[in-house]
Length: 123
Picture 1 (cartoon, one colour):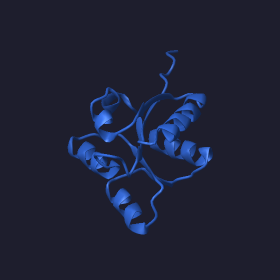
Picture 2 (cartoon, rainbow, N blue to C red; picture 1 turned 180 degrees about the vertical axis):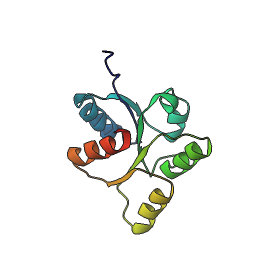
Picture 3 (tube, rainbow, N blue to C red; picture 1 turned 30 degrees about the vertical axis):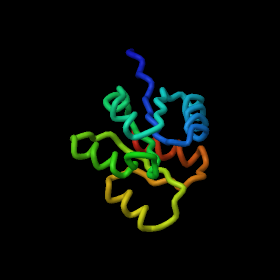
Picture 4 (cartoon, rainbow, N blue to C red; picture 1 turned 30 degrees about the horizontal axis):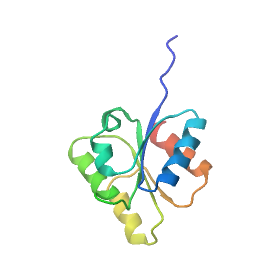
C-alpha cells in the first residue's frame, strides 16, 4: 500500500504573528504548511501549483485576497479557497462567496472551525 502524501495548505496573511500561529496549529494537525505574507508572494511561489487548499486573508497589503482569488480563477486554477477576515459586513462576505470561496471565516475563529473548513475544502 502506498502511503498518502501529506496535504499542503497554503496560508496568506500579512499579519506575521497570526500567520505563524495558524502555521503552527496546522502543522500540529499534520498538514504541510506554506506560509506567505502577501498575494504577490503566493503567486511567485511553488505553493501556487502544489497546495491542496489556500487559506486567504481578504484584506492584504498590495493585492487583496479577493483580487488574488479572481486572478487564480481566471488562470484556470481549481484550488479551493477559504477566506478569512476581521472585517465586518455582509457586503464583504457576499463578495467572497461570489469570488468562489469554499468557506468564509470571521477572525477570531476557533481551531475546530478552521479544521472543518479545510476538511470541507480538501476532503
